[in-house]
Image (cartoon, rainbow, N blue to C red; front, top):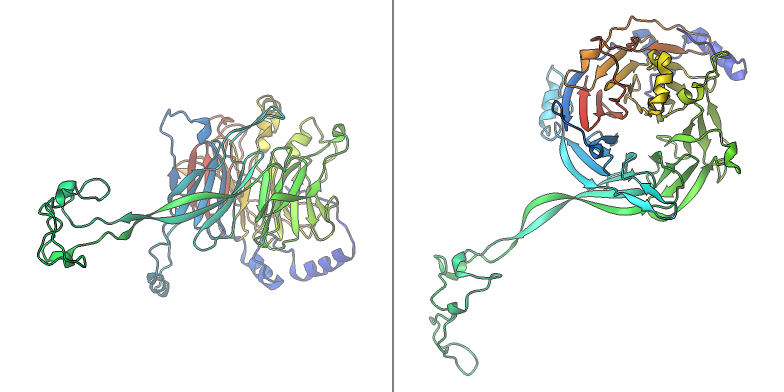
Amino acid sequence: MITHGPVQTGPNQHSQLKRLAKYGPRPVPVMNGGDEGEEVAAAAAGPPPPLEWKFSQVFGERTAGEEVQEVDIISAIEFDKSGDHLATGDRGGRVVLFERTDRKDDGGSRRDLERTDYPISRHPEFRYKTEFQSHEPEFDYLKSLEIEEKINKIRWCQTANGALFLLSTNDKTIKFWKVQEKKVKKISEMNLDPSKAVGNGCFPSSSASSSPRPHTANGGYPDKSYNYLGNDLSFPLGGSQALRLPMVTSHETSLVARCRRVYAHAHDYHINSISNNSDGETFISADDLRINLWNLEISNQSFNIVDVKPANMEDLTEVITSAEFHPTHCNTLAYSSSKGSIRLIDLRQSALCDTHSKLFEEQEAPGSRSFFTEIIASISDIKFGKDGRFILSRDYMTLKLWDINMDSGPVSTFQVHEYLRPKLCDLYENDSIFDKFECCLSGDGQRVATGSYSNLFRVFGCSVGSSEATSLEASKNPMRKQVPTPSRPSRSLSSITRVVRRGAESPGVDANGNSFDFSTKLLHLAWHPSENSIACAAANSLYMYYA
């Protein structure tokens, strides 16, 4: 199905039409920052084949019938930029770190393997590294409000001197953590008979001779063979030269997490987003009505850069739902709203960015408005592509891919929950319609992913002509619930290429004929920054897949 949008014919459109007449439509999702010639070559080669996903690992797997504790449910997932570390946060305020292990033993042998005829087919493997208690439950006595310890977001910061740095936040307080290996030092023992020593390395009183020791006027001993330590101590063979004195030896290393800074008392409403700036010095935090800019080194001061709070709260029509910095431009950030719009702002324009530089929103189809229209249009998550050219947004029904150079509408729309449209009343009654699903993009920008109900997640190909739409279950057999989707070749519309794809949909039942379980939902997932590997959370279990 192709959705039409308003076609504008300004000066920019004339140049686009000339380019389209010569080269054809731009292959939108190729986000490698290359030139048009590379994009045309990619389009001529056709879309990449669908990925075949395989189970890699699971951490915290539940046994049959095991009850999940509320505090153990995972609420945040984040890879670092290198992809060698993964962090998860849970509702109990804990942050758990995992590190990659399959690269440890590559060393020089990697070059030898690259010289051979066969490729390296090792998939990412992670192991538990450490965990720490990031937040504790608090109580705001002024507002009589209980503040949960649940981790809302985690963001990795730049590493330094072998230490890991990350930001974690709950509803009110952001914390800056340093995780570093520390050597636990141990004192080596002397090689004296331990049965002859007591206390803190002291000798028993009987070990000293009670007889008076002869001495000369200058304090020396005339008889060099006099045993002034007594007969109870036995030196090792070889005499005093073979005596091993106590020394400090490195026994083992342990990871220590230390809270470096606490950024508090800056938000009246619940924090929904934090995002690092590409300058490595600042970050933003966003709540329902405001976005604040912080310096990592300064915890007692922040700058309010976006404020959508009206003078009269009765005039409030929309709230901020997510915010993220541009991956390379330190002056640009985007934030989404509950009305389904995305605003791009430039920090160079003014201190308070109350006006946006670009607005991205899809026009509502005439006659389609209902009681649920605004609820399902609310954007729960946005993510920039790796090169910053595209923004991926997730609302309740769809995934949308936006080109920041084209604000007339999304370049691609992927239907995720269209089969739930007849059930919106039921979903409203049980509050499921307010679930906030996250989204992510692959490192090469050719695929996008998001979660769904029944612990399913969906992967879509977003290259021109791609019909990839795969449904996978968060289990050891991810392909169990996949439903084949007939290919739908995309068509171009003059200067606007807009594609709508449906992903493995069925009216309320899965491939096995079971009804969808709205109590099991996969809200959080993350794509490895450089490889086709996905980590996703199903309740308290962390599942990892590769392709």
